[in-house]
Length: 46
Image 1 (cartoon, rainbow, N blue to C red):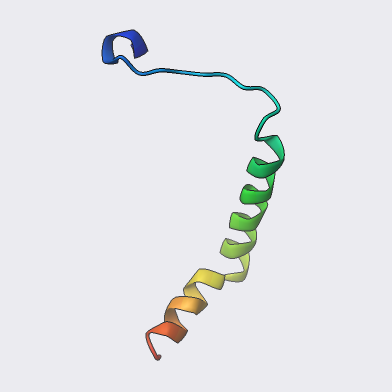
Image 2: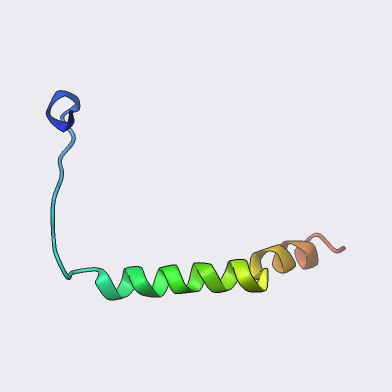
């Protein structure tokens, strides 16, 4: 399928492993603590 759509695919093992883990953990904390939700409420003045 990628050849038909001319989509380039690359594989770079161990390059972004730590960054991906950090981002995943941060997103989980955001969801669990409802940080983005609270930020929106405060910014909307509610």
